[in-house]
Image (cartoon, rainbow, N blue to C red; front, side, top):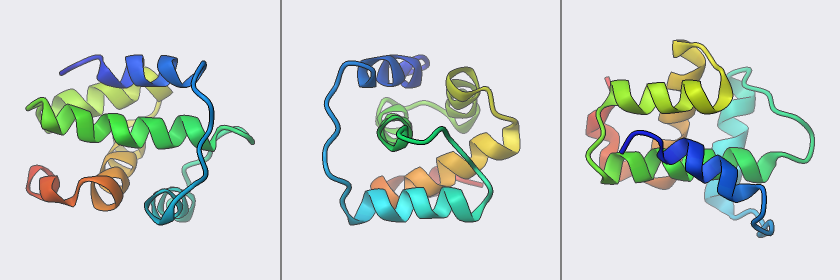
Length: 101
């Protein structure tokens, strides 16, 4: 559903950080390779955004809705949002790859 990314990003502000797992490492490394940056110490926020992408997919959101959510949450372009969505889908919810162009 639209808005899940916003809620997920806000929820992170009060959630404790967990140790990164291999999927988190894959996701963050993919973002870095594609030039997506974030403030130091904000890995957990980016990981939460990635998981929120999968929540959007699970809720039946379209690609356009999910792109809009990422744009609202992080202020990125369509291209940057697409990079995050692709990386999140590959790392966290590959069962939804068919939703990608």
